[in-house]
Amino acid sequence: MNLSGSCSCGAVTYTCSTPPVMSGNCHCQECKKASGSGYAPTFFVPENTISIRGEVKWYERKGDSGQPVKRGFCPQCGSQLFGRPGLMPQLVAVRAGSLDDPTQYRPQVDIYTSGAPAWDYMDPALPKFPKAPPMGAAPKA
Image (cartoon, rainbow, N blue to C red; front, side, top):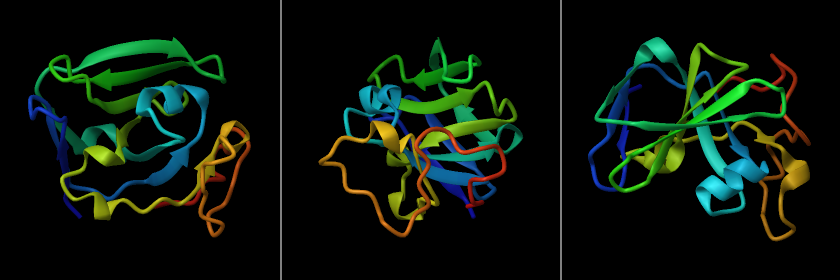
């Protein structure tokens, strides 16, 4: 599977030659603010399998775990593209909406559902976690 995508203006692009190791819809407050929606569809790939071209600006904050969480943006258009969760330093999170072919995204889980707004429809077939899933509990993509 080849995955590719970019920011809105095309200044930042990425390619990945491996399928995601995990994918899910995050309903936490930070993801809602970053996405401007009820959740952020995100997939995770091993850091050594993604090639990022262009300048990425990073914002860092402390996550629920106490570990740092970094969010990567295009400095030209502001599109959020990437994440680097401190709990999974070997993985890069990629926002599914940035894919050149968004039909490649297949969510496997809903996380932080305790923060989901009442109007946010969640697929009843996906496993749900009120916060982050326990390590190893989230299905593999």
